[in-house]
Amino acid sequence: MIVNTNRRLTLLFVGVLLVVGAIESPVAQAASLPGVMSGTTVARAIMKYFGKEGAEEATEYLARQGGREIAERVGAAAVREGGQEAAEQVSRLAGKYGPEALAALDNAPELAPLLAALDELPESQVRAALARLSAGTAGRELAQTVSRVGASALRSELKHPGVGGMLARTLGDDGAELATKLTGDQAIAVGRHADDLAALPSAPRQGVLALLRNDTERMVAFMGRFAADNPGKTLFTAATTTIILAESERILGGDEIVFDADGNPIVVSKAGIAGRTMKAGGEALAHVSVNYLQPLLLTAIAFVVTFATLFMLLKLWHAHQREKLLIEGMLREPETIEGSVVEKKAE
Image 1 (cartoon, rainbow, N blue to C red):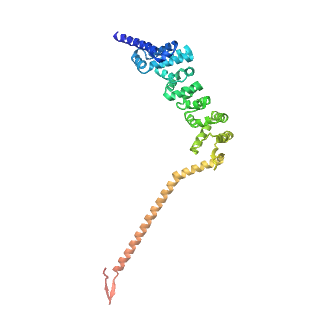
Image 2: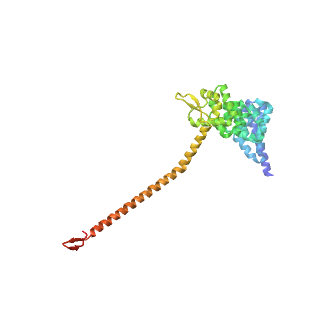
């Protein structure tokens, strides 16, 4: 009983604190009465989110962590931009997702477009979207993109965190739509060229985006090859883009863009099917030669050299032994002096 009484007193204290704060705060003084009431409603929704067991945590957030001011600010913006309906949506989000929802909504320069975009998302994606939107400067940039592009920016960011929103921000609706069709690696590859694509005039930019939409795998593969073969070079300049669009079949078929002595881009053809087959066969033979035949050959050469060296050493040793025996025989050969045989003594 004592515990329950203390909880009721705590909740009552928080409610009084909210009302007094709403009257005294500069934000509330500048706002209309509906805005003040909405801020209080949002604060109550936050308390509902924490529940009776979290009354102390709710008090901490609202009274000491700036939660009350955020609730007032978001509530007033909701009433101002979308009326009572928007205020009720804010309260629902706050009651279901708590402080993270308020942080996300407070991070948005415009509340109405963001609320509309969140309303378009499946419920299973709303929490993740709020988490992305509440992430400081990155969340604010995403909210700005959502205000301009709509819910597709949120969907693209949720599919490719950190990349999808950037594509939507840089390339608008086209970037958001494209991001939802790309794999993670493809989105990263396209993202590296997003600023260059955005700088192109509308017609060539749309041409490149059409290639990316209609033949994604081969186009992204070409972009990767170009980046690997031409480090530091910009792919989507006016000159290279003109060639890409004019020779798209050749380029997507495997031909490459290189630069002549004057730095002008040109398309060069690769070998035909037979040439590619011969090249592949040559590469296979080279691989076998380098990895298998050469080590065997070197081993055989080492064996032959070692054997020949040992053979020569053996021959020299035998020759030395024969010479030694001959010398010893000569030293032992007897001499005849005046008809007498005298053995020769070794000196």
